[in-house]
Image 1 (tube, helix red, strand yellow):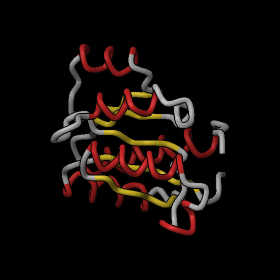
Image 2: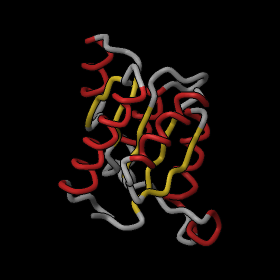
Image 3: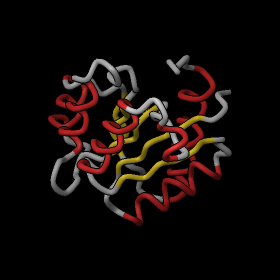
Image 4: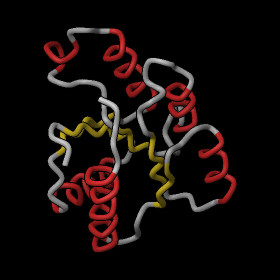
Length: 148
């Protein structure tokens, strides 16, 4: 299992972020979580971390190992963040998992066409959130080899 696993969560809803972060903790993921409320905030932080060799000392964080991204954000939406990540050679390797309430096939197709590595529809209840977090941990932390 990866140590010092870092997840960037881009989510404008404090309630959704709270439920997700609790599910991650209950799944016993040893992960540092960085929360960005807006697409602009995520882009700004990713830009700074990717261009700063001393980012760890400045922010007590590094580039994320993966990004959980809501699509429906104020200002720059999730598609804008996804495009930013996947068109920058220095960070395009970071897996982006779209995490959205939308189950619209158009949103799913567009996300994958833009380079999303996975698309997860937000669970409807707490039990389902915990189950999703356990599956997420099993795949992204225990099975996959990620670039560091």
